[in-house]
Length: 303
Image 1: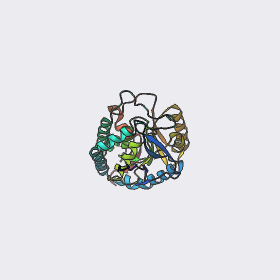
Image 2: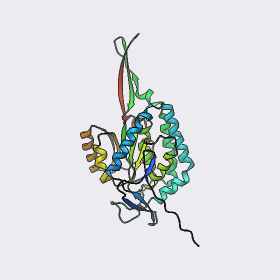
Image 3: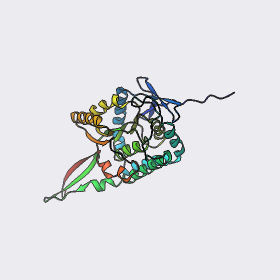
Image 4: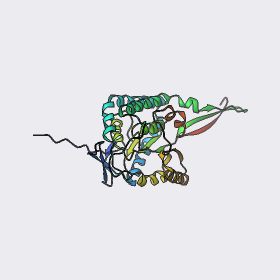
């Protein structure tokens, strides 16, 4: 008698727990051969608001941790991804045929020159290690002791902004997601991230790794669903203090207008320009600086 395979039930990762969308809606994804793979939760605006609440609750505790400890946690996450590289490579390959509103007919093609699955996982591991190394160093570079001609010291230090919204691109579903969220959380921010709409499966598996890592629940919250439905809420939610996104011109305009209304910072990358997520340009100190605020302190000499 042949054994029937157990079909996986993907869930979103919010507040350190795996939950279904409050709307109970799903959309199917298919493997590269066009065969049904799984039903992915189609998150609603309420799911996004709930994720922001979870991120805001986790924020103070995460920000109070030492920079050294945050670096250790990111390094541990890289170790876990390295240990499960085969599983993640399989997730990237299996999820490369999703049906979405923009591609309803089935499998989608990777851009020419994009990384293979195992190369993408290796690059994601390296990206986590890179930002783990910056954890206890960025303050020395971005902070400053300001010279003043008066009897007091003047210090500029950095502080995390709070909850940051991340919108991942369609391609490089793991590496791009890691490249966008790692510099945000290393400085003490928390993240609500929307995974690739056409290749969400790697983000589902990545959430399972987050759940068993040392990263506190709520620091990273992963949602799946359709960008056109969730993007306006990302842009206008008052408790989302910054947006990091890869977006097309219409999406960038909507994000910029919503961000201006709710006074949030934006870092918007263009989808119409080819971008190599494995390149040196995809990482750097400025990616950390973009979601930091500067605080200046005056202290009398001799007091």
